[in-house]
Length: 408
Ligand SMILES: Nc1ncnc2c1ncn2[C@@H]1O[C@H](COP(=O)(O)OP(=O)(O)OP(=O)(O)O)[C@@H](O)[C@H]1O
Ligand SMILES: [Mg+2]
Image (cartoon, rainbow, N blue to C red; front, side, top):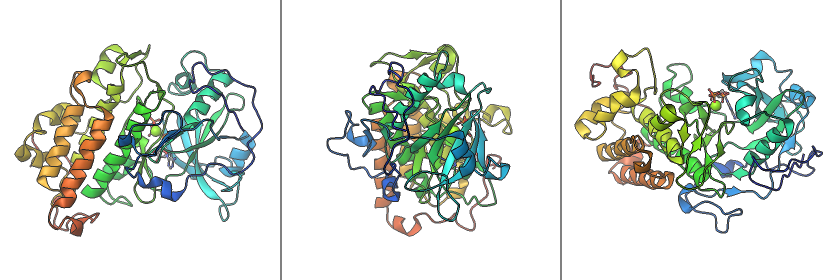
């Protein structure tokens, strides 16, 4: 492995020939990494982030394992359909088992679980978007190495990759609770409604991850911020996945111009949709959409809703500034769990993130600070500890959007 391309700039990194796998213990994420504690790391390497992002750093050199296809085939039991964790625009994600220390394929009884994302080279959203221009093994390798250097408790850890033939597979730490999308929108089965306090914790964690990407030395624009890319670990710590669409940011105030619009309908910022101009603040818009989803329990875009409600932002925006109107918009599964003041602050923050003019949106550092205030406000309320992370009250109405109390 090794693959220590010196430059952090994926676009300009001088690619080295493939080197053998690293010896010694891999950088396996510790459970204690996941708290998303606000304390900044002093003297973080590589021009570390400002405090709001929390304790992240840009590693001098990534410690990524370069897997062979045979190893990943063994780890995932031959990419069996039963091993599929999910499927997205890039391809399928499989469950696999590796040895915690060596990352060699392992039995389920002795190994730890990893998530293996097998990129589909034919997919529109696949390799072509991994690196603009013609992807070659070298550009892919330097991009992966760049991503491997980003280390933060609210980013899903990239453990290694495989780039054999036309295949590209990425190996990530396993997030046992799956995606925020599943928890927020799937009804029934294993998906108990997320409590208000958990939603706040998830929002803060995701905001810290994004703030870190924005403030790291080589600014990274996430570009496809959405609920399915926020994964949850065993204690519901939020971590951002999928850096496949992330690109290094432009210099201050400038924008990236992309030749094709890539993103997800309902989350993409208006300036990006209209012009292809991509700013750091375009991510802030995406964050605002997710915050709105957390407040309302409704998808950003849903054709099953009446047509004037199908786009959540357009529908909900006028209701975000007044507490009376907001109450009807809030997810009824968290009725009785939130302080009105706290919810209103969060809603106003979402509204600011969703401002049409990118310059008027807050920075992600500001967003983190504002959400921490919301959490404090919530926790300061009398008796708030008593309902931390409790399931919804038995009598709470089953909302979704058809609830007659929703504004229409
Ligand atoms: N590291 C991981 N740990 C556990 N489950 C994962 C992990 N990565 C992905 N998954 C599962 O696989 C599913 C598909 O993820 P994937 O990122 O491929 O698609 P997506 O996020 O739905 O769409 P997109 O391709 O636009 O990102 C996720 O919803 C999640 O359930
Ligand atoms: Mg994804």
